[in-house]
Length: 432
Image (cartoon, rainbow, N blue to C red; front, side):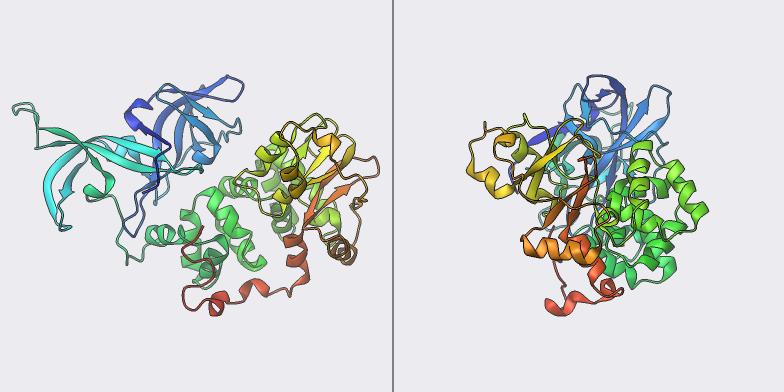
């Protein structure tokens, strides 16, 4: 097993305050949400149930958590205030795991002595934001008011039965757990070949971030079908988790009244990005771009830039360069000054200002640039991403090569079965 970077017992998290990056309290932790997995893998921690000031309980994904200590939890500051609703594939750690009667597993994988789960330890995986259950603190014997309490001990998660799924089960919970091993493209391919009923069941069981990643890889018809079967508030949550350009593409396929209703349910900042993209023609730089490239101010250093590039959620195309702009550094930005490529960042000392190494010779794309010219631009300058700048000189976003390819390939390219390239296992199967 890889070295543990951080471990905490969940009883120490119950009731602790949750703070945003500015030190303002968001609420308090009331529970943790876990998902059981197949193949002898420990349950994964999806997020926290947080009770906010209004006593509403909301879901805080672990991807939005930047620090977990016994005395506090720190978030990214982006919190969805919609009420938490537990899904069939989810388990509440404090509510369902603690005080549960289970059995220890002996060396021959046979159920042994009965124990009571008193506490659960979770660990953060090295170099990732993923958390999973690591150990159980258990008490032997049945206990009870008239009996002496039994011996307590801490055991590995694999030493306790009842916290994993049957490898060959066919329920939605099993499929979701199996899909966790696959890349979004492979999950999308599997979903595409399910019946509409089964597809809706699995989509409903996926968490918002995972479903957003999968929707981005599905054919448009499947996207529309799935989003149409979700409750509207859940659909808005998933759209918020999608890349703005992919969310705009999906919304453009919906009837006008459905599109407006979902936009109204989205967070204002997310909805504003999507509305801006919807204002451009689909096959232009403005219609193709993402509004979330890496933007730095002129006084940022190479070390700052590399820290941004290392963010796990970035696609390789977006991580290939940073864009230097005057304040504000959210799109549309202040004056666009130029681009710094990743290779250049690797060649200069960490304290170097990005403004001193910026490439300002490359002419950016206007938002109305048609797709053929965008393609030629990327090919001519050997680029995987290009800046899109308006007449006033503000950076609007960036066009990436994957979005260009998406619009150049045949309309049904996502329905191509890629398993022939790697036999029955499929591309990326088993990888992350």
